[in-house]
Length: 238
Ligand code: 4AZ
Image (cartoon, rainbow, N blue to C red; front, side):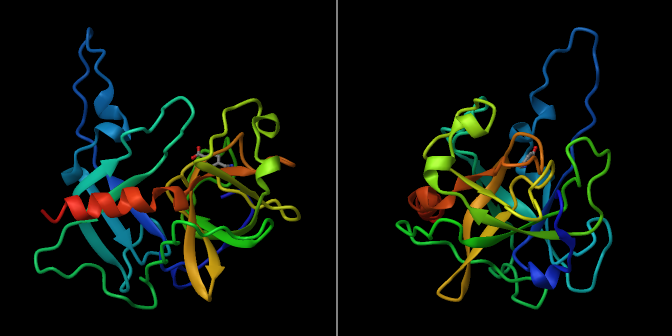
């Protein structure tokens, strides 16, 4: 995260870390098959979801670790524009219990399909991503930042170097301290307080660099995917 502050997972108990164990690719001279390098090609059994961790690489007593039973990438995810940048992971459990709520591990709420919050509502982002676009290292410790929801009229390709903005995206950015998501934060939460519940309004998706003046971060608009999420979860029961 660009800007923001070092935080404790109890401040963002809905933040997860995902580890992907990639099989070592045997490099052949003529081997151009690269799909197993991309996250899209990762098998579910190579994924691990870590909840409750303040320091990315350090075990902690409050953590809960899950294997992934399966996952769904949105059928209409567009690699070029990042339209429909969302996936759903089903955590594996042997005994029917998933995560247990605790000070370190607590889900955010999903918004209702029609929820629209006022422009400039202040929301929170978090993640273990890089401090700046060209930094070599990811953050060791989870960070938190504050961003505001930008009006739709300002969330246009003109402010983001001409890149396509779709109705499935929302823009959020800081106006004062320039907190912003950065590389490695993608997939993480943009949560806003609604009726006193921390509500997942966005998924960190992309941006034109990190923390650039007058450039918002771009987030997947979660309210557009409530039906999709419900459909996946229902289809999984039959
Ligand atoms: C990324 O590459 C990324 N400033 C995520 C968010 C932003 C930029 C880059 C927004 O994961």
